[in-house]
Image: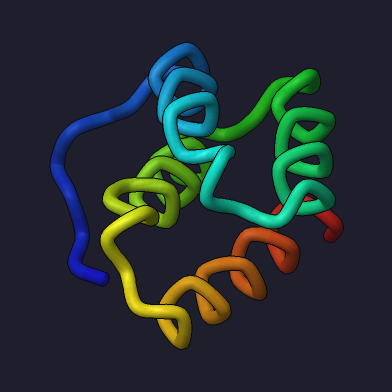
Length: 76
């Protein structure tokens, strides 16, 4: 994924997660919500936003990659 110059707020990330959650495994959704309850660095918010962006349009293989990356971020 390329670098984006737009900084996304935690609200942007939560909204994107809400919009994509029906396409995602429940455990990944819940872990991400829990992670977002704390203070998150801007760079991490941007990463999360772009992993969630157009998640519903991604192939199953791409969704699996994104799930792994999301879990790597939120469980670390």
